[in-house]
Image 1 (cartoon, rainbow, N blue to C red):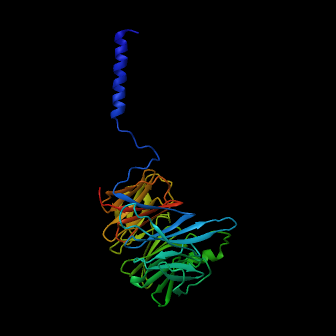
Image 2 (cartoon, one colour):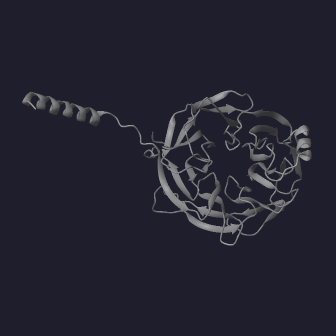
Image 3 (tube, rainbow, N blue to C red):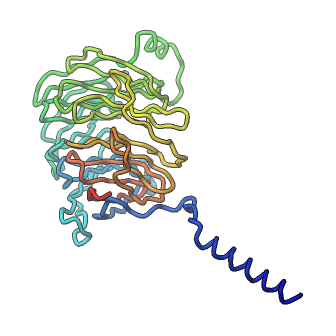
Length: 363
């Protein structure tokens, strides 16, 4: 090989190496991005599967329901209560206050002030003080054990709401000791069809899956297993009912201005919709995700977010600007997301772990 040719080979190699060095490398698939706008407050390892997460308004109390299968047992549903650190550092850690058996990990709610818990007990709902193992008040329901599903507890609005799955109803109690009201979330035709249809297992698609109460206590929301979202007045008067998406795991939420907001999926987009007017508040890309909870609507006192799970972590898009306010670096599939009422603390649950994050406000 001539000297001139060797020099050309060396020069080309140097140029190629320089180009490779200076070219931005694409993000490795499955690798979480660096944390942005958040600080880790603590980690909770879970003996079982994370089912529900609830934070109080102050972000100091966390209620966690789990399901596990101990040896020689079919299933154990448990409720664990944690006191969270306030320092914003890892010097303090979440402190376990109580763990106890409950009827159903799905039927659990924490009041906004963190002082009260509601859990299903038989066909009824039991109210308990924070950290108390005993029942302080029992609200009479209908049906049989484990027929109650999602709960929403708002003592400040003097309301407790439950989804009665088998009867396809929303149950409402006026607190502290008021009467129970109920109304159906399935049409007459759907209920008749269920009565005459043999069903060996599972639930009909119009079974209520989620319930919520607006901050002023005047509106109640629900979603069915087929994705139909309904908005009701406190007295049960129907305001609107829409099928925005057939993904019932994409639960709606009440915004700080008491609007019911939900998600519509289509054309590889996640669209935040005002349920009553059907106007689009925000639209972002729907990335590939293996998470059980690929997106969630989280509203604090002053700001709302669309949390989107992907291989790179959980991105918090501010509503309605769409700006990414924070990135939580979670590589594992996300099962549950929760935010405190002040919009400053986040809880991210994977199958067997919960991480607690403080939002710094830094972009």
